Length: 436
Image (cartoon, rainbow, N blue to C red; front, side, top):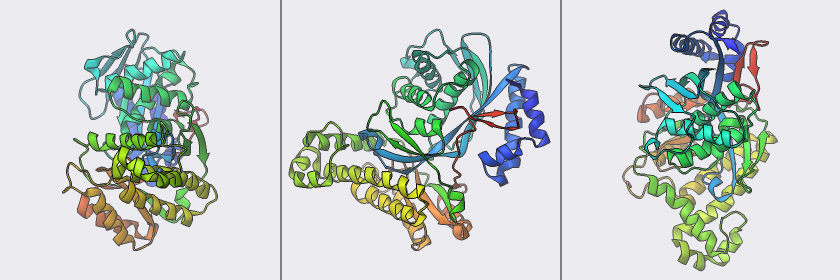
């Protein structure tokens, strides 16, 4: 490992500027250099001098496959430049201590007890303990470390800040005690188990796997224990479009019933046709037995099942057209995905708060502004949160000003896809050291 002082000196000399430009955007290099230096200064002041690992974990955006992972479907996702950054070193004991910028107090977890603790539910300590338990159960070594964390994944923006933190903790264990050998799937599985069992929040594997593997990923969950992952080689930066999300400011509070109803209704609809999950069904089969499905899952269950079937096929097709460089075809699929989420999946308006419609408003404003150029769709769970937009470069500044005039400063966040290979910053050869 390298000392924190050596990292700081390399940053001040500009030796890591090329790495920062690759990780973020060229215009963000100065701000990111200052961010890294601030983290290292706070790290040295707290545990004292010594070798350190500088580890990263990005957030992610969903490009296709809206509400498909929980029924063994296909998704298309990408890691983005917003990330969690940590400086960490072993402390010679069995206790993990983490201090995060912007949060009071300290996360303290004794690794001698890796059982879930009900009193820790809904806390960061639960995630740390759960990740440690998952890796230890897979035969990996876990031990005490001290870490300073700086997270820039926006909270509540649909970019998976919790998954980024889970993967970051797993990557620290991997780098400090396992020679960087933990695979992306190992880290993702440990993170999901931590969130499901220790934190108390149901979720699939898409978020964690996208954060851990990075790049643009086509993920097929037909076998949920071993999803098929394929990297799609594509650069949105060269298309003439700017990929962005718009945070609408809608609250996720009290939306659990809305979220839970989607997999529940899809499941009831699938079971009416003799399947435990929706994967493998066809639209023709649904239409042929629509009365039976309707009786079992209601009208909305029929529509949501149709959405799943077509959206899974659409997400797989999106990966193919991107790999072939067919951006126009990709944008057409984005529009069709958004239309399906609106009409069939119906995750744009909460039934519990029908007067609050930030997602439909943002989609309508974007469609009217673009006038047929580019595309937009809902992103993630829905009902509140963010939309995703592909905006022609020449229109982006005006689009951002227009939307932020309605949803507030900073609501429009341009995204850059984070390529694999920068899971840990290394000074060897002045570059990012891949750990896959």
